[in-house]
Each structure stands twice: as structure tokens, then as C-alpha cells.
Image (cartoon, rainbow, N blue to C red):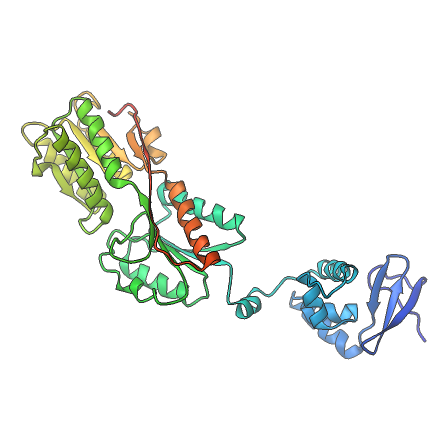
Amino acid sequence: MPRVKCPKCQQPERILKSGIVRNKQRYYCKDCDYHFVIPSARKRTRETSARDTGATSLRDIARTAGVSIATVSRALHDHPDISAQTRSFIKSLADEMNYQPNMLAQSLVNRSTHTIGVIIPNLNTTFFSSMLSGIQQVCARSGYRVVICQSDEDHNTEIANIQALMNNMIDGLLICHTLHTDTFEHLRMQMNKRIPIVQFYRVSEDLPISKIHADDEAGAETVTEHLIAKGCKRIALLLGPKNLSITQKRLKGHLQALKRHGVTLDRKLLAHVDFSHEKVTRAVDHWLKLSPAIDAIFSISEKCAVQIIGHLKKKKIRIPRQIRVVGFGNEYTGEIVEPQLTTYDVRTREIGEEACRVMLEQLISGNREVVDKRIAGKLIVRQSS
């Protein structure tokens, strides 16, 4: 009989037979403390083929260890029926053979992929990327992965993203709607499935699903109170599209502050825009022609507030002496613009974190109780006001 070599250390000198397991001769190498069997030529061919594809299967580990596939599977999952010694041996062998679990196969058995789908309007600003960072951190701590889809502020892309994620075995869906999403049937159609859905930041109040958003009404009221305290009477308000719930909430908060202080509302000072550069500039130019003159501009978009500061400076308008400017959102650009932008911090990261926590709680508990939570923000006063 030819001398047997250890497949681990390649030494033939100290190889001992260690019994028959499932009709296969098992060997033991005293040099490296390693148990093994010698596969047949046909089996070696199949194993070589598996290695060529870079994939080690449970079957490969079972052949090498001289045990059944079921034993390998149970050992890797710490099944109590398998002895601690065997579990340790199988796990060590799996590491040596670079075994990677087949997540798709596991998901078919467990009906769980440990994957959360996230649809977000865009990642061009720190505003939404900060929310995503919060989501990813909470997911990672809980052993979940994140699949991200960007709707790019397009309603049809949002619909396509939802369909794609729902058809690809996610465990839950987190969604922040686009600026132009004014109908929600595409989401309502998914609500009867076992997959929980949580909205964050931009939400629909009409859908009976959980939502995590900023305290928009209180935030706008706080900003307007600040401007009135600075002596402002003619506050221009830059709003988003009318269909957005955040637009209506922030308008409501602004009007409440005006009413409380006896400031008469002038409808000419309200502008609904799509946040494009052209529309924002046009609104500001219109306000600058009004009489009496405006003394403040409150933009519910941080990006637009920074743009407004640049536009006013080009027109040689002194900020805050002639016109005070306040934003909403607290993006990093507000700190680097000159003068630095006063803003309302909506705590975007905390919104993402809380939305993810609510999602995971629903997944773990199976409780689909609707949660409606507002994340309180704070006013950050800088040079522009």
C-alpha cells in the first residue's frame, strides 16, 4: 500500500489509521493533529472542480472530515447533538477550506435574508446620506445588511425601486418619498405582504404604516419666533411643492408664530418652488421688488438657503443687516458659507436610526403596530440672522 500523506502538512511519516467512519478509512496525522480521509479519484475531481470555482460546499467539508453533510451543518450551527470536540474540528476545517455560507440557500430555508431595503431620494447632499448612515449603523449592530436604491427625486423610479426590492427577498423596507410623490397606491399595494414598511422624513399621513419624521411644525414655529424676536415683520417664506407633507407642516408652524405675535400675513411673501436654482432665484427677485421691503427670508430647504445667501451677496445686499436668512436642515454647507447660516437642525441621523429601530422591532416581535414618531430638533443661531 502506498504511503499516505497528510493533506494539511504533506508529511507521510506519522500517519495512523483512526477507524472507519461511514465505510471510509479515517487517518490521523500526529505531526499536525489533523484527522482526514482520502477521497476517491472521482471525488477528488469534484473537489478540484469546486475549488476552481472558488466555492467550498458542505459536501466538500463532509468528505474531508469523513462525516455526513448533516453533521457538518449541525456542527457549524452549534447543534447540541454534536459534541464540542466535533464542532470545534468541523469549524476549524471549514475555516481552512475557506467555506462561505450560501446566503441564498439559507434564506430559502429560513425565509429571512437579514437584508433591509432602503429607498432614498438622493445621495448628493449630506442631508440624506446622514439618514442613511444612521440606518446602516443600526442595521450593522443587529446583523442586517442594507440594499440602497436612489429614486433621484423621480416618482416612477420610486415605484420601480419598490417593485425591485419587494421581489428580491428583503425582510423590510424603509422609504423616504420623492418631492413629486403625491399618490401612494404603489406602496399601498405592498402593505398586505409579510414585509413591514416604515416611512421616514418625507411621509404620507394617509397610509396606515409607521412613520418617523422631523418635528416640522414646531421647527418652523421656532425659526419664525427667532426672526420676529430679531425685529423682522416682513418674512418671506420659501416652501416646497404643495403636495409635500413637510411643506404644509412648516407653513402651519410659520403661520402660528405670526398669529401669536400679531404679524399680518402677506400672501405675496409665500412661494412654492421645486427647489430648482431657477425657481428659487426667481422667487427671491420677486420679493426684492416688493414694497414694503422684506427683512428676512426663511427657506425650508437648507440647500436653497445657501443659494439665497449667494444671490443676495451678488446684489450687494448686506446679510443680516438688510435681510436675515434662515434655513432648515443643518447641512455642512451652512457652516462654510459666508455669513454662516442660521438653521434648524432636524437631526437627520437620528431620524434614520429611529426608523431602522422601529423596523427591526417589527421584524423581531412580529408586531405591526403603527408608530408615528417625531424627532425633536433645535435652532442653531449663526451670523446670517
